[in-house]
Image (cartoon, rainbow, N blue to C red; front, side, top):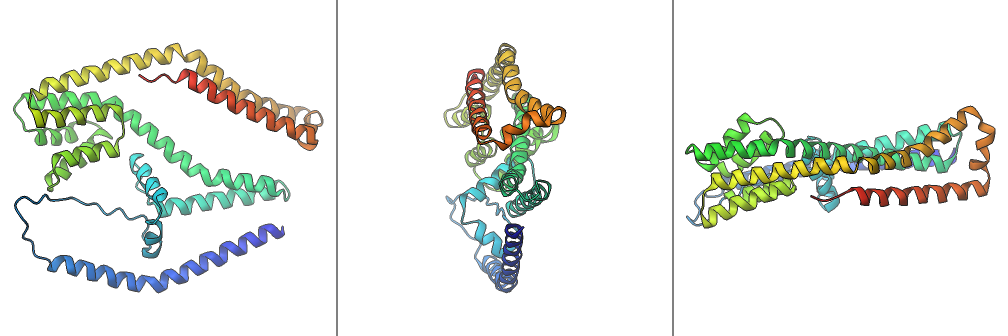
Length: 323
C-alpha cells in the first residue's frame, strides 16, 4: 500500500508542476506565435521564377504549446504520430501518450487491488495497460493498409482509363479521389491537393510513399516518375502495373491456403496453455496452486513461456512467405 501511495503522490505532484509550467509558458507561446504570423504576413511575396514552392504541414503533437515543444525533441513521438496518421486516427501524439498513462495507471491500480497488494502483478498490468493503445493503433494501421492494397488496383485502372481518355495526370488524380472508396480516396486527395498548391509532382508522390509504405505504392510511384522523366505510354504502364498487383494478390491467397495448417498450429500453440491453466484454476485450484506458489513452479513457468515464445517466432518465420 505504501508503494501505491508513493506512486500516486508522485503522479499528482508531477501533473501539478507540469500544469503550473504550462500556464507560465502559455502566454509567451501565444505572443511568439502572433509575432511569427505577423512576420510571415509582412514578408514580400515575390520569388524567383526558378524557385519551387513547398507545401508544409505543421503537425502539432499537442494542443499545449509547452508539451508540443517538448515532444518535438523526440523522434519516437513523431513516429507515433505518423503511425496514427497511417492508421486513419486523428488523435495527437500528446493525447495518445496521456491515454497510455491513463490506461497503464488504471489497470495497474485495479490489478494491485484485485491481487491484494502484489506489486509484481501491478507493475506487469501497468506495463500491459501502457502498451494496449499502441497495439490498437498498430492493428488499425495494418487493417487500413490491407484495405488500401485491396482497392489500389481499381484506382490504378481508373487512372489509366482517365489518361487514355485524354485527361491530364493531375486531373485523373482528382477523379480517383471522387470515385474510389476510402482509404484510397483520402490518400489520392492529399496527393492531388499537394501538387495543386504548388508542390512538385515528384515530391507529392514521395510523400504518398511516406504515408503508405507499401510495395505496390512504391511500384506505382517509380513507374509514374520514370514515365514523366523518360516518356512512354502511361496508360499501358498503369495497365501492366495493375495486372502485376492482381497477380501478387492471387499468389498471396494461394500461399495463405498452403500455410493454413501452420497458422492453425501457431494459434493452438499460443492459446492452449492459457486455456488449460484457466480451466485447472476453476476446476481444481489445489492441483494447479504449486505452479504459482512453489519456486520450482515459477522456474517451470518461465521455461514454458520462453519455449512457447520461441516456438511462436519459429512457426511465424516458416509461414510468412514474401511475395
